[in-house]
Length: 201
Image (cartoon, rainbow, N blue to C red; front, side, top):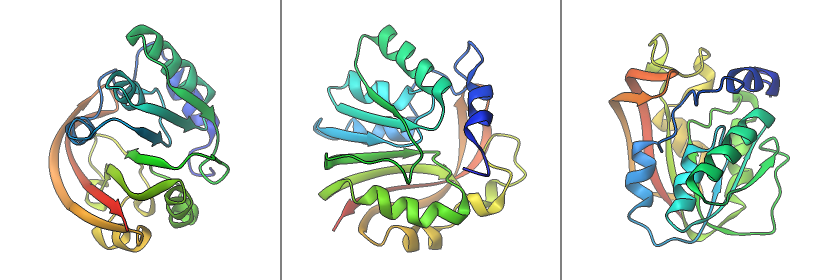
């Protein structure tokens, strides 16, 4: 990914500390706790906090990221929590699976703008009909806030872009919100985000 290549993330994840913490994203946790465990795909999963939480709740988890260091950290966290996550090194467009998943978790998966719509369409191919997507990422209004996220507005989201990029989904919940993030060093403080829960038509 030209905007944030694997080398960028390998350097960021090389710190011994978990830069986004070890606990799951609060919105992801809130939503997944409502569901009966099944199979879930976690793209761009980084250090693995959300994948490991899902596995701890009985989900069969497949995760991927472009960062080898991210995978190492995720494997360490999974071992610490005594769970298993199948974790692959892959770019989003290169990812392939024979599995159709019950759910997909997209937590701050900011793909480069030039491939983002294609990436989201590609990921939806791996979701079962009536499968669920849980999504949280930074909104365009986040630009300039010191609390995290890409510094490129094109990589941030608007409600209109979400609707355009996920035409396969019927949104149960879709909202732009101001929240207080406390997820390690790089997600900290007042933040502008978009959250949704969508069901594949």
